[in-house]
Length: 177
Image (cartoon, rainbow, N blue to C red; front, side, top):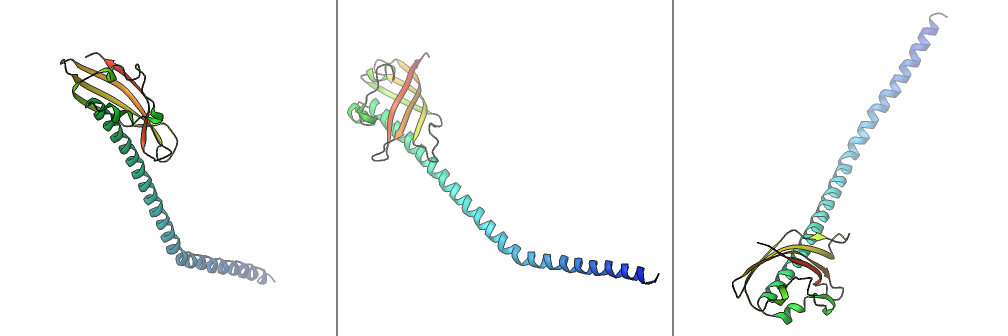
């Protein structure tokens, strides 16, 4: 009887260890078969997400460039004497008040205008901006030779009708040189 008890205990441990070994060997085989499929799917999902993020980033950049180009066009038309064409860039056929663009609109004849802008600031929470504020620094020479410098910003939004950029507000002030 004394020999039987240790033998039974040994068999229970051997039986348990055999089952564990079998379970341990089954699991890696099953994971090895599904791991490449899961890795491929995850890699494809990451690649698709990266493509979508790149596309969205490009749309955002294109929208900002389009708005800046429209602002530059407005300022070029204003400085070249094409006031009626320049006025069409304002939303709601609204004209800036006298104090909004300082005395920029009162200049009758420009000899030159240098336009510098900083990176537009998005005013909304959209993925692709619908409303921007563009910081500007303008250097203007007028017919009497007096150089002037203006700094401030222009706000723009996309028109809900034709999706083009429109000016909605501005704040410019004369800077002393």
